[in-house]
Length: 64
Image 1: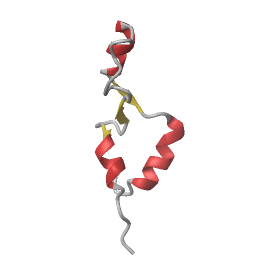
Image 2: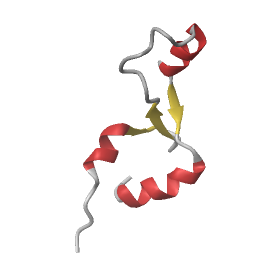
Image 3: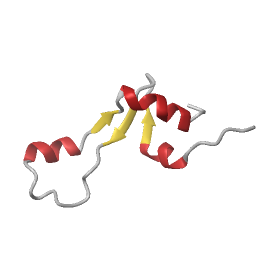
Image 4: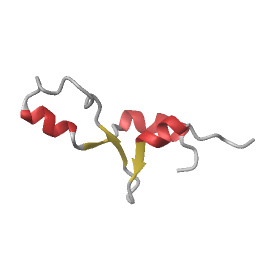
């Protein structure tokens, strides 16, 4: 039977050429005025997915 890709996960995670999984950091929508400049700047950056979550994501994205 054909495996299905979870679209929610595929839209949030990008794969680099060296097979690292990149995810956008959360909490960027509102209430950012109270954050320090350091926190705001870090929220703009993309982050590498933790090794603990990589195995789970690989099951949700079978064709990566």
